[in-house]
Length: 308
Image (cartoon, rainbow, N blue to C red; front, side, top):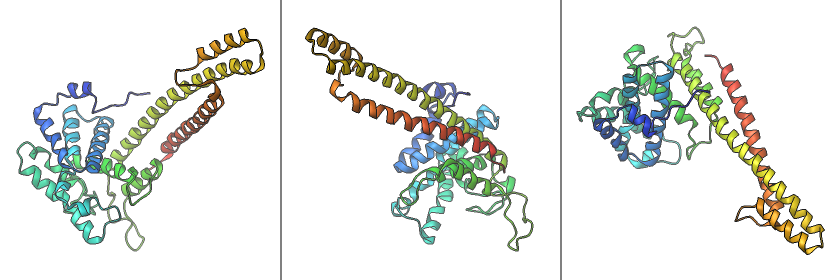
């Protein structure tokens, strides 16, 4: 399986030659609330990997990823009562929230170091079919970096669990984005007025690959832990064999020998009397994780079936 790109890895940062200028730009995230900052970092990570899947140049990938880090910078100026509201926004509050795009654009344009990344802040909610905001621009009038960021932003926002909504699974999230990539039919049910949807199909297909990579990586990590649990279960079962023999013998010398053999298999914080409980917990954890791995394999199969 292909190694997953980690933009936060120190080696990666070094190889991407992030100079003081770019570090200054990323420092701007400190002004965001914790949730928005985490969202921005996640969107940047996805954006970076989308650029890789799209075979974009190293320079554009760095640029696009930095734009993604800063895409919600305008939310610094959104009132906390709106930005951090635990329930759904009213129509009026939503209009206030939408201003983060133009505010972010002005913020970047007023800072020479941030000015090159202004397009990502302004256009990342625009739709190819003209249904986005703040200006409702169409098609290739939307900078490509903003088109990529929109896909990453929507996917992260849909799958992130917030106070006012339950968690949406990966497959359901991708199906929502598939609908966004398809042309909207005319109001009378006839042919779509435009041949494009809100988001670019090619970018969405790249997202499929990113999600599959993430899922494969999770399978590897969980399989390693399942293997660890298997070893632990074997260790406890071996200890229990000796401990069971202790209960059956009346020979003190043999009992002392069996106690030492039992201790050989135990860790310092484990007590022989609690072996059944330890084993039960390990076996339960093992079954849960094995089941989850099977679900992940199934998820990959379902993603590969998706069509736009």
